[in-house]
Length: 483
Image 1 (cartoon, rainbow, N blue to C red):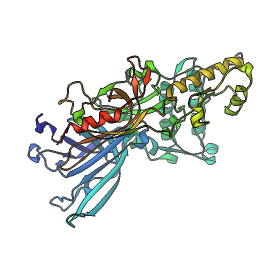
Image 2: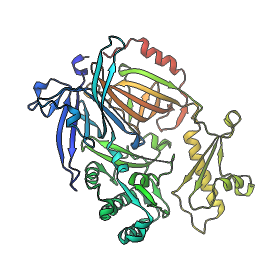
Image 3: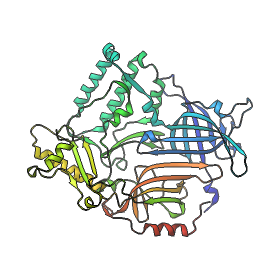
Image 4: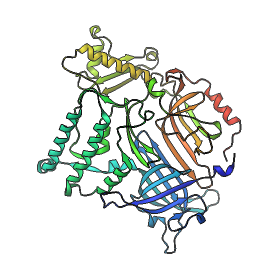
């Protein structure tokens, strides 16, 4: 393998939006690059001062973070990058000429560290921030008693949105378009409040440019759309602070659903993904899967655990009038049949370990009998049991690999969260990814994995991964070196 191909190939662009404009405008501040500076025409707009970076993304977008470490190099005016890079500047991280991450700078620091080996002092600039999705939480709408009483526009807009959503909620409607209507109306209301919420026009412009709510997404990304069988009783705005991400996540039903952002590398935009958690066999098999060659694996930390073992599965239904306590009582009455699902094999070992969730998206009308409702609840409990009954046998943990240059390996792509990897003869679900690089070292990617198990070609769980320790040892005893 040609070592030149494995050299770090990194570009980090800093772009400054005009936060005073309602339409996105971005000015290039600098591009940090990992190659010789003589390849660039304007040294003022390019720099090799980057000495380290990392970024992480996962199924919870608000946990997305990054950091950049820069040298203290000064220009002819004795200004360094702390002076020239500002908070709320946007960060675009490219690896091997592909965009991997978009973030926003939240803090700047001067840092110093004394080496334990030679006593030398290392000084640098540290930039920290979050993924661009964090702007969804920054944009706040603040309601209070005075606002509701004195601002007719806010009250009318709130009522109009609820009425509009109710008209759209025909049986079997898709939830994602409802999310988009709420998203659009939230910002419309924010901007209509004028003096009450004067700031935020520029943040809205950034969100409009980089975040999309599309109704049509690839089947591999959304194997099962979330549909609702009855109109939702929505509580959109609360007294005090409101942000759009909290409102959207309020429509979720964990662990039934997932709501996250996925980067479209070609368009350089994030798509909002709202889907049923893809753990049913017919949905699991549709998730993209990547086979990891042993040569790229550097570290591992894998095993099983009893920390999330469940023995009692209950799905309550919004609007049905049967809460968890009533369901347990009815379960003891023979004529109503079984409502919850139990794991008789694990109960003697682990005792009562409940997984109780409220399932929002079902149809319940006055002509439905209690027996119909309990049947629905039992079916949902069975689904939860199918998903999580093998939690004590699933392998989970972390895997560190060389960041994949897709030009080097045929049919091997960079793993993304919300997808699968094939490894050790089984399959794993990727919940989080973290990319990092330090000067003089390789580019690395850390994967947070769950649900490691043997599956058949139809996505059905077959058996646990036996003897995986011996397989891992065989990989490292082979003496595979990456550098």
